[in-house]
Amino acid sequence: MESTSHQPDVAAPAAVPAGAGWPPVARPGEPGAYVPGPQAVDLSTDCGQVHDEAEPAAPTVLNEIDLMPDAEATEGSEALAQLKAVIAKFVILPSEAALDAATLWVAATHLQGSWQHAPRLAVVGPAKRCGKSRLLDVLSETVHQPVLTVNSTPAAVFRSITEVPPTLLVDEADTIFGSPKMAEKNEEMRGLLNAGHQRDRYVLRVVGNDHTPRKFHTFAMAAIAGIGDLPDTIMDRSIVIRMRRRAEGERVSPYRTRRDQPALQEIRDRIARWMAPLADQALHLEPAMPVEDRAADTWEPLVITADLAGGPWPRLARQACKRMVDAEVRTEEDNPGGARILADIRRIFHAAGEPDSIATDQLLFTLNGDPEAPWAEAGRGGLTPRGLGAMLREFGISSGNVRMPDGTQRKGYLRHKFLDAWRRYCPAVHPVTATGAGSRG
Image 1 (cartoon, helix red, strand yellow):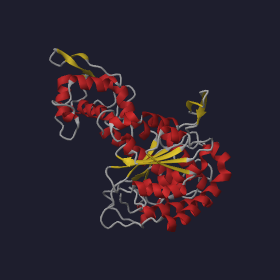
Image 2 (tube, rainbow, N blue to C red):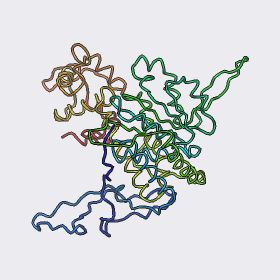
Image 3 (cartoon, helix red, strand yellow):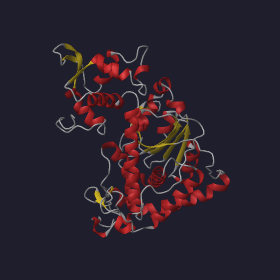
């Protein structure tokens, strides 16, 4: 299982001086307000630190989310704190942000009728005994109407989803998606989990002796646990918690169903009672999100839940959202294929001084020569021109005749053809401007 001390990652915002430009205090049920941009705040005055006048200490740059003060607390704030404590009692999560995210995800299942998107909770780990199934044990007693499945058929799953969505808990997902052959065999399950991320996406099947077409609901929040990553399309619709095996000295309470179930269900019922009257209010909230696109869609129910609760939760939700999404972006850039090849080529162009073009053989020599990259293992002789071309065609990038500095022509790639893909898929790697001229040095 993964370790964490569950200590806050950020100092309490009370240490910021009065002139720092505080945002308005968030109200329960309203999106949290932001400071207009990061601010350089000298904390030395309030902290009583003495600095050499000749070399004043550099100001600490605080993120606008970290500066959010607590909102007015509601009953939900205390209920979420109670839920968070009980999850931490039985499972060691990888970080405080992951613990906050799991807590808010559980609470959000009790208001699924208000959400446009049903976030998946991807509970993945590199090996057995990382706490994935134990987390699902706790979730099964605290989420709304759990439907626990292990290697179930797609037909059984979508017939379990009604107009009032349950919460799907899928354990041992590696038996469904653990290899390309398994994934191909279970393509229908992947399609079902993808479709159910958004409201009003139905599965059409014929039923009865007269083969009458019938629409089946797919919309439902789902927690999916397994060894290794899930298919990319599911991970992209998920709040990802990457579990690790518990280290020596880390302790959790053993989970006993008959003993611990009543207390967990009492917390579940308390959260359900608190959230039930808030359905209409939640439906009309549109909070400012610290991320964009599908990540914003996926995290919005958790941020709204936090805003309804008040207290520290609006800040904690946005911190968890930003940090966990950023972590997944970095993970994606490090994986073979996809953004990884774009990121590595971006580094090669940058190291070469941003030339207008690079020959294919030079590009492959550098890619295959990186001992920490996966390209040398892409085939018997490493990544080939054909393999590189196939990967880049997915991003609309193709090779051609390019003129080299010595005047000769060779097969290669023009820098400007990568600019759009770099901005979209690996924007943090030597960023380029909208015109592509910004980071040529």
